Image (cartoon, rainbow, N blue to C red; front, top):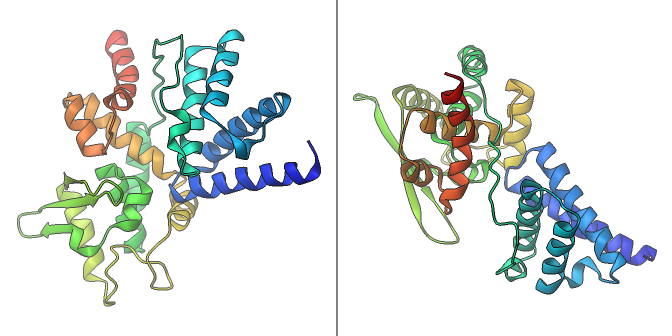
Length: 280
């Protein structure tokens, strides 16, 4: 591949990394996803195909190649899902539509989540945090399971609090589908949000603002959580989902609360729950 093509490919993958970052993915996830696309691009080069001129047929042939190499079901699923995300980032979701995979068994791998001891340690640290915004961000992510991208788009009006009865809810709106979901708030979260909002004297509509009084960015949230609490947003979301499943909440409700459009995504959290049941 000549230098010009190599430069274009690098730009495409760099653009993908930015897209993932804006979606709130962790640094490790971004590195993994971009590595998958880089490997895919290298394979395309052997076929005389450029990453920017990708077709549905190319994706299908690559999946076929992976199957011929006897890759595991979980590996092929992860690669397919990454290419699917890449296609969405390029605004060409049709690239991965109707892709056939002969290995149809789904090999679920539970996402990483915080242990009860880790949650206790993080909350203990949060209670001593003098920054009410940072504490509120941590609590919202942990106790509502919203994506960091969703957290950043929340407005004050999306949060309904009744401090007297210690009840509340947050309305998460999906800009693309115009759908919304309502998540009930725990007493501790109601108190934390009330305490945070009571300290706000600006007129910004955003629920969370940066130090420059602008709507907070996903990258800022990621950096803060990593520096202050040593955790990534997605791990807090996974902890929320896993905790609901562990408590026996119906999967359809977990999917609804977490905003999963495919309940198979929710089923991933059953893996460790089943394992614990077997151990017990």
